Length: 573
Image (cartoon, rainbow, N blue to C red):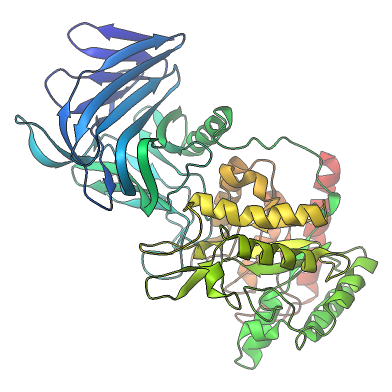
């Protein structure tokens, strides 16, 4: 039940929390747990900035309270420097609540701040930028990063985003993205703050927790590509309460499904071959390149893949899936085979199929190599930044390439391993055909692949490292992505698998297997692969980083783990 007290102070009492609305002109709502312990002082007058100006709250009204069955809704309308009006709303249910905003007017969104913003409506409290306060002990970010640092102090800053490269401040490309939800430890459990956007309204590229010594606020970055003309409802921030951090993320994901904000993929029997052990040739390519100080993509050669198969056959290792990795194609953007490297890619597919194996082709997402500029996203200088999935001409080109790659009249591949999704365009001043951005742009790109692949081969397998519930119907398999060689590998990969299962519970998990600092670390990770998902092998004869050869005991380890995995699968079925 949710009850409302309207005595001297307006309060909402629910099973899992309390909200207190002070009557001393403070622009805050106090969040307490069910026992009355303070969790946060939430600044209500959030700012919604635009390209034309920053948003300052200038005049306020009174809270309106509506009780509707088992929900209490509190609404407040204010005046703004850039909007005709803004409306803030708390929707309170027994075990959770959400906070959302609606603006009216015109403008292109840049930064949307939640629980922080400019306000000048009160002489008592002055003007300027106001922050929220928190009593949390620590925060939790589900997104993997190069240091595998998942926890942060409340006065720090943490980001969940779509992008990333191995550069300072951007080393979080492994999941693009995970669920947009932070979790916080309090004295009596955990609470989550997650983004709840309606389908079609996920136009942001990052979700930021901005902390400082005395406060915090949340931010969604729109980068100027979402135009408002009239009334526009911003995504809500949902508050979930749970015993631990992972259950807080899980509660957020379940809410997205229950509210139909993300598709609920119903459990179904997937093709058995999707769950067969995987061999990806990338690690073996890297070994061949390292031997001669070469460039690994230059070693995506049919003759080498023939030798990889021979080496594995010799050791009685027969993966169910073989991935042709970077760069089997002549151009990343067009995905036509490089016939100098692969004189008979169809013949290699036939060779695998005759042996009961499947072939996946590696795709480099967003790369515009070989694609005309008028089918690409362009920066202010006219440079191609990425292919444009909203452009009908590019979509037609891409769909034709997919048919060529998968059809029996073409290469007859069986699906795709999509990589480099973190290279999704982000930044101001770009030109592109459509009006979608951020997570919606990622969905548009993946949808073209998934939709066309299933038309050509209904059992085609589509793999990516995008474990967000909004993307769950555009992928079949979540790849845990590259291993961090400078961290404790097994706990890091266990975390990734756990988040992937929470975000996309019906997706198959590819455990990945590269890079590895040495054979000892490689063996330790191989040992646990069967417990995390589909075992994946990137090496054929050597560990590329150290040039250590795989010996009889190493091949036996692979066979043992794969057999244990197959027994587990048989038991599940």
